[in-house]
Length: 112
Image (cartoon, rainbow, N blue to C red; front, top):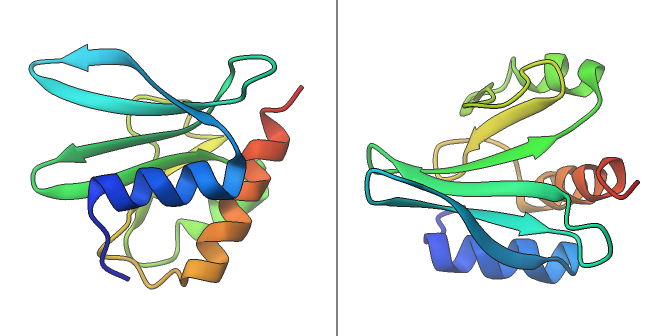
């Protein structure tokens, strides 16, 4: 799957029914945070770094551990590495359906 940052944001918003926010601005790079409407908790972070489109999600620790074996998935950048991972969206073997399930799980885990 090859996506632009704009397309990825639209996909995440559609799947999670969240809203887009920009609380992190570092050295001219904008990190899009997708948040829940009811509690404002972040459920996903989208950024571009070194020409790579990255998506960080919260999952169960055992899921994080399992997914780290997949190409294009790495320990979370700037987040708790036990509960979060980062996906190089255009470099991973994760299918769009798997990505959807990961997004739904991140949304569920951050809903409280």
